[in-house]
Every structure is written in C-alpha cells, then in structure tokens.
Length: 127
Length: 458
Image (cartoon, rainbow over all chains, first blue to last red; front, top):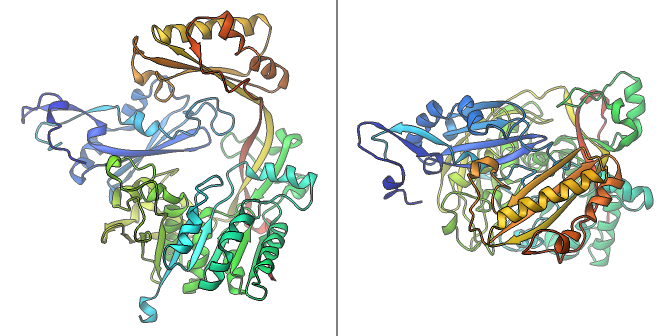
C-alpha cells in the first residue's frame, strides 16, 4: 500500500507537534467471533507504528470508541512479535451466533469499525 | 534430499462447509501435496446431522464429501495423498461406507483404507454424566446444562490429534472423524510423519499454529485480506494454503505456483489473530500454544516462514460443543429509494413496530438496521446521507414461540402498498421462519472420553 501522499489526510503536520490520525492509516485488522464476543486483531502497517498503537490504543479508549455498541467490557492483549494488539469486545454481537439478528452477527466487519478510531501520533511519524 | 531436510506438505482443501467446491480439486491437481485436510463442521452443524440420522440411520454425515471423493479419489490414490476430514459428523461409519463404495466403483479396491474416528459423541451419555455430577456448565454464563436439557439436540467433545495419528499409523489414507479440532486435522499428519511425542509441547504448538493458519482456507492466502487488497492478483483462482512442514517444528505457508491470491506476512498475520482470545494461551486438546512466540518472515514470493513457536502442557479437559433448540427468528427487508430514502425507511420501521405492538405480539428482541447507513458500524457511521440513492430497511425478530415470528413474516409485504412510498426489493417473497439452534460450550474431563479408531479396507 502506498503511504506517501497521505499526509494531507491526517491533519496538519507541523513536524513538531502531535496530530490526529485515523487507525486505517496506521494499521490493518481482522475480526472474528467467540459467542457474543467479537475479537479484533489490530496489526501495525509498519513496525515503527506498533509502539504508538500500544501507547494510544488502550482498552479504555477502544471501549469509549464503541460506546453504545457493547453490553460488556473490552480486554486488550499484546503480541509484540507480530506488531499486533488483540481486543476482545464483550457483548458486541447481539447474542452472537445463531441467536443474533444483526447483519454482522459474526463480527466480521468489527475490524473496520475499529479502524475508524483516531489517535494522537508524534508530529514526525512518517505516516 | 536428506531425511533431516524432508518436508511434508499439508494442503487445506476447505475452510468450512460451503467453501469453494473447486479448492480441494485444485489442491490435488495443482502440484505435489502429501495431505489434504478439510473442515465440514460449524458450531451447530452436528444438530442438523443428528436430526437427519434420527430420520434415516444411514445419514448424519456431510454428504458433500462423497461427490468430492468421486472427483478426486483416483488421483489421491495415484499420488499417495492422504486425506483428513471431519466429514463424519455424527455418523462417521456411514460416511466411511459411502467412501468405500466410491473406491470400489472406481476400481480402487485394496488401495483405499478408511480410518474412522469416533468417541466424540456423548449425546446418549448426558443424563448419566449429569447424574454423576458433571454439570456441563455453560462456559460463558456458568448455567448448568440441566436448565436446557430437554432442548439438547447434539453433544460432542472436541477430540484432538491423537486419534488421527492412530488412524494414520494403522495405514488409513482417508481419515474420517466426527467432532475434532480443526487444528488437529493438520497437526495429526505432522505428528504421524515426524513421530512427535504427545508431550513435545513446542512442536505440538507449532503444528497447532500451522493448523490455525490454514483452517480457514484462502483467508490466509489473499482472501478477506485488508492490506493492499486491490492489488491481490487473480482472486478468481485463489491458491488455497499449503503447510510445508519440517520435523523440527518450523514450517512455511505457501500455495501452488500459478494460482492467484497472495501469501505475505500481513495476510498470515491477519489469519493468526482471527478468532483469537488470550494469545499466550491458545488452548487445544493437544497443547496450549503461545502465539506471542510466533516469528514470521517472508521467504520468497507467496511463501512465509514460521519459526520460534513455543507451547505448554495441554489441560485435563476437552471442550464440548452442545447444540440445543432455542426458538425462532425471522428477518424481513425492504428497499426505499431516493429522495429521503432513510427517512422513509425509518417511517416504515415505526409503522411496522406499532402494528406488531397492536397485535399484542411479544418478541424477545426486535432489531432494526438500515443497510447502506448503519448496519455494519452502527453509530460510528455518523448521520445518514440524506441523498442516499437507496436504503434497505432490515428488521429481525426473535421469540421462543413460533406464532409471533410467523405473524411477523406476514407483516412485511403489506407495507409495499399500505406504507411509505418508493419501496421495492421484495421480490424474494415472504421471509422464512428459522428455527434457532443455539450453541452451549462446556468442558469435560479427558478421562470421561474414550476415542475409538477403526480402519476399513475398500
């Protein structure tokens, strides 16, 4: 994926301050289900982004991002070997499996919902 | 090639029942493989199969497996490929008989040995187990199985790789199981080929990771891959993945030359995190694998090498998949067109809910979504586009009783003539009432389960 030329989409980059960047420019993701829990694996697009994700994409912030969409809490696990974080979103799937009435009963596009989240990144991060 | 450098190639032919019919054929014909693994069982598939078997004792297995054998068995035998599949459902013996019939029909008598793995089915033992103090409590809610006992339709323990290893050791070239873990279908061949001990935790963990990577078929080889997806080549002919395994527990993931798709560190990583809980404790019957030890490296085009995997001893338990009858649901849809598509759809939803309420129909849940506006991302999608060309109203209901759901299905079509304007997309007819078979995950001590292996010769 060509990442050059995206600076204009990521807010004002002065080089010194921080700016707000949407996760879709920093990571890719895949989601799945386990009962009524959706898991979202968030994977840094480049290794230097991983420490930024670890610092900024906290379980609390993810819970706030999904406010109103979960009946349970959020857990976070780290996989530094894969530059990835795994989030468990409890009560995300309307009962899950065959019980759920949702279009996304199996949470297959919860991944992209997380990529909408914005986080602060250092001004000099080469996004 | 020295024996130390020997690799064993295990191909994924099917990621789920309903996966691409061409995939296993192309795996067998597209290049050298040693094993072909296939997954036929979703969480509640067994309950459908139990119903089939109760009506006809010769049924209760994945019938699609037989036409596939018609297509590939001669080539499989010719090339010395061995198959592992959980196509047996609740009647692995009947599935094996059908495969043997295919083998004889194609003149392969004496060259096909079908291994049958059973012992997973505990439906007939449930009352004795409960009476003996095994609560079979729901792993998510803690409720004892006795609360839904009357509605249970199927109950199967997830067996591990050991029985598959035994069937291969006894010379089976087609291994048909009931419920086993998907990873076992890949790990079993690796344990058999390399003689891995049952307590060789690191190697078992590596085989488990290999199994997890390929268990969803092309979902690791370019399918459903978000990175640079527009440039993934030739997805009309996706190469399904192949584990190129070594005895030391390291392996590569690759695919046949000349196929489409892409195997890269990002595509493999996406599959690794799929349906994962705590990465340090990926629990299977055979081992507890630590996914935080996995090291990935691109090793050439469409080839990723996997090393460093560590594991811990297996637990004393097996997971049990129990399916029980829950109730009924139905989903109705209508499409509303510009102008004010979303507003019209919302008005239709209000009218429909009011009608349902006035009829005194009680539902456990009524859920409305607007496809094209908020069905996938809910409130994160932001305010609906007032100029959307169309919006699909999608409304679903769930109840324990059939009658209210049945009546709901008759309340969709009338809206076409007696509701808001600019409505279309109803040619599919009245929505169907679906029976809900729900999933009850539980645990049972391994000491309660006795797997059984039998090999039949065609």
